[in-house]
Length: 356
Figure 1 (cartoon, rainbow, N blue to C red):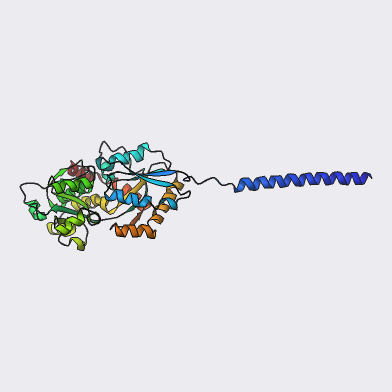
Figure 2 (cartoon, helix red, strand yellow):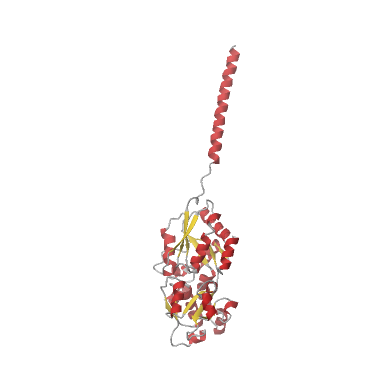
């Protein structure tokens, strides 16, 4: 009898231990499988565009916003907000120094922001060396175009002119400013540069009204949207110079900068300055985020950016709108920008003098 009692007692303790173990295992399994929600779930990402609506920076941002979210864990909503001013300095300042470093604020900012820092523009409160680049699209060569009824038909006409052509720009680092400064340094031309326009759309309107005669812009831009389609159809504008090594067949009437530099025997310093300034075109249209965003979120954003631009639907939209979609990886943009702000003192001094 005593042995039976001992057996039943041990059995009860064993069953109790087994039940306790089973409860513990069940609890461990439940807590182990409960994964935290992705950071971007139920959140909204803002893309701050440094220029007015309707231009290509704005168009690329809106195209991207329609496709990028589904390639991020949690499928966040993405909206676009325009914050024009000072050649995108206002937008760059906001993304770099005001926005939280959480990966919910991105910036589609001017590709020439490195020049604002290099030149010590007081309004530029950002540090390009600390910014995190997600990627870039639309690497391009530049063109200087002129109203066809303007008296300057060629670079030679500008060199010999008594009255200077009047070009429009958004700020110190936009493509018009860059283009005419390159021409001054390498070819000896002079222009009147009217800065302060909020975007390219407004500059084009001023050219149509006759307030301006010229503008520098990307060749891809010049064939991507109105009013250029209508201008070309009606012979409204003339192409004065293009910056690529090879002629773009769409503007075969315009000589290339390398050819003219060779003819005029432009010295090495001038060529170095041209290369530095032209980075703003060859680096494309960068997408950035705030310094301090965790590395794993930057990685997610870079991957989603590339995947979005591989979407067949996005590519079809871009083709219809005549928008180029050649990409530059965020890491490569970052390296190019950081190299640009560490130029020799003599190069920086000469660029500063040109931009005065």
